[in-house]
Length: 418
View 1 (cartoon, helix red, strand yellow):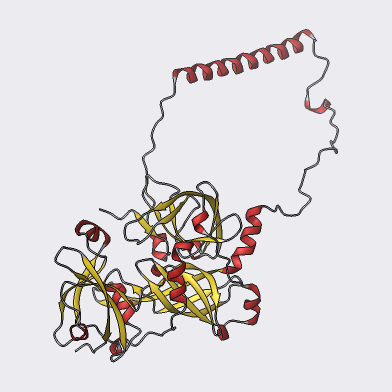
View 2: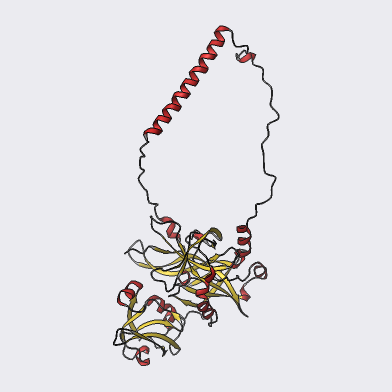
């Protein structure tokens, strides 16, 4: 089944899609409408005929006192008509103030990834692929400014750039991610941020999403289409919604969530962050159904991610390896077979790091160092920050005889790819 959910980080290729053309339907005009239209036409014709007859009678019988020939018409300039223009000033609303106060806390994120693509001549070449998303400034430590966003905004990145409200751009590093919760925290070094920028930006105020009520206002701010910050408004349409591939419940809103809005802020009427914009339903039959991760549900994961050690990627040939072969347990398979979502190990290579640590075939990896894993790609993402000989904590679900799984956290010293 085609995935009906669209995660809304933006790539320029999206602009190249042809809009779907729908055939125009001819509407049948009701008989009563035709009758009214006929009556109107008859009235117009009759009126014109009557006016023409009156005018002709006046000319022939001398009833008209005015002369209408061009040279004899007396005209006077009209000087009293004037255009009415605004006296100036701006209109201020509650939304205006909320946006003004919140936008310094929202950033634009550019993700540059290196991907292999097929060339015109049939070969394979590497190409830089940019994508755009949003983020929320949530905290600051002694050396870093911390930005909250979605995992899918930063995954696969080779370089990350954060752009602030004053359009200054600075490089960022991933501090921690959780693929299952679609959350990530990235860090910008304070020494890289200009003093003038620091005066413009501020840390966002977080609200309590557990107190939200259906129907209350919702304001979305983010980097729509990669053009920079924009604001959309709506209401909280529903609570506790679920979505395939996401571990948790979501806020539903009809505030427009567009490509590039992912990771941006969903605010309440007080200007507090109540959610992280993440996706919408993208099918022709549906309009105005977007989703945001409730900030209160995510707070514990965010706190854990923002307090991790910031690491930089290890060059590919120098990365540590688990020594397994596996495949993805996606949400539909997990639901069908009552299995945890993650990476199913169908072979723990003999002499490899996982086998040495006691991880066996049939187990499912769900996290590395506390960061959720929902497939092989996210497992590789987590391991690319570690070298051979470094130790990581691998969360595995081990199958039991009754069909249930038991969770264990196993320390694994990473090996080499040999």
